[in-house]
Amino acid sequence: MRPGHGRLLAALLLVTGCALTSASARVVASAPPATIPSIQQWTAAPGNYTFTAASRIVTNTAALQPAAGLLAADLRAVTGYPVPIAAGTPAEGDVVLTTGSFGDEGYRLALAGTATISGSTAGVFYGTQTLLQMLKQERSLPQGTATDAPVYRDRGFMIDTGRKFYPIGWLRARVRELAYLKYNRLHLHLTDDQEFRIESTSHPEVVSATHYTKAQIADLVAYAAQYRVTIVPEIDMPGHMTRVLRDKPGLSLVRTNGTSSLDLSSDQAWPLARDLITEYLPLFIGPYWHLGADEWLGTAELSRFPQLGRRAHQLFGSAATGRDLQYDFINKVNDLVRANGKTLRIWNDQLVPGTVVDVAPTVQIAHWYGATDMTPQTLAARGHDLINANWNQLYYIIGISRPDPAAIYESFVPEQFAFGTGNTTMARFDPHVLGAQLSLWGESGRDEPEDDIAANLKNPLRALAQGTWGSPKPTSTYDTYTAVISAVGDAPASGDTAGTRR
Image (cartoon, rainbow, N blue to C red; front, side, top):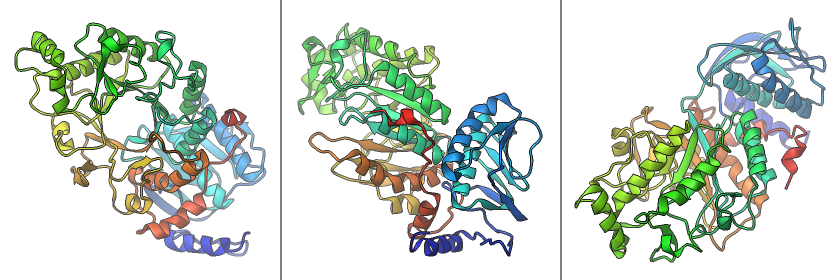
């Protein structure tokens, strides 16, 4: 044991209410071992469950075999024991995986003679992560029953690859970390003004020299699916298209800041967008597609391009403006992705009232910013579901700013949206609030090493994991929560050699 580790563990047990155990004494634990996120409900019982070199994973359900395989590899990495997977009757010390009804992502973990995890396929997987975190700390665990499920269904992290390229191995490592913390969304911002990071056969001219192949992305999507992480792709349109439009001057609206947006008055705008979206829809097997749709043209800029007004008048009448072309474009994409079984998401900026065309209420909104745009309350009243991407608290901008894990842990809730430099808070557990995401943005001319970024993300991700799961906080302050972070540690390296590919 390293110097100081005993003091850290003692402090952790004190703040979480866990009971110390030894070979000569067994004490009933009033609380379970520390986990991130914490468990919703725990009922203590006397005695201990002990994982040994003879322990197996036992399941008689074919749908739970993938979770059993992942857990076996992780337990071997953590304990050093080869852990066989078996069917039939469990023995003392075994881990049992079985079905049960505790909601879409809920589970029950019963620690007695065996460790029995029951739930949906997703719930059982999350239960394995809870057990894994416990066994990383102690092989002998207090007996009791945990009943656990998330309050928020969207628990996400976004990575901007358009401004900084991250190797596939680094992305895979983030997937494993997210799953360990029970996140379920990885939003990949694949394109921006600077670069277009994914192979294209329909428009190869738009692709950056440094990019992901479709085979790499398909592998990442499949890997993430094993760990119950849905990848949400973003091909940003109709703004942030400088890279795409660099050899298409007839489709380009050059903004006052020098970037290019898509000219939605052109008959060729929709075919270009449709080509790119249609090409990638089958590649991403999850139920979401992110269009971006942010920062197309500011209100003052619309008048610089009179062709937008003329086209809007033709389509929607004399009261229409270029903004109505933008919303019509969003609705066309919405129809396209819905026809392919997916739900559309966009950023919230430039969603303003008073237009002729309204964005369809089935479009989900990632709300990051706002003071003059429609508030999250107004968007919810219009029927939109919301993902909270509060830029005041949940943005990591490389070389500029980092989220404060103490503020996230102690005061942030998913209903607390950005409003100017402050916040506006919706009703607690408003059904339109799906959850929240932390975002990692690049910045032109700024950089940080990938290992440093991963280290800087560690505590903010753990603070937000607690908030988006919505369970009772294990400690009242962030200073004491850091002991929980240390005890739970990182996701195990389970021999996934594919994850080291660069």
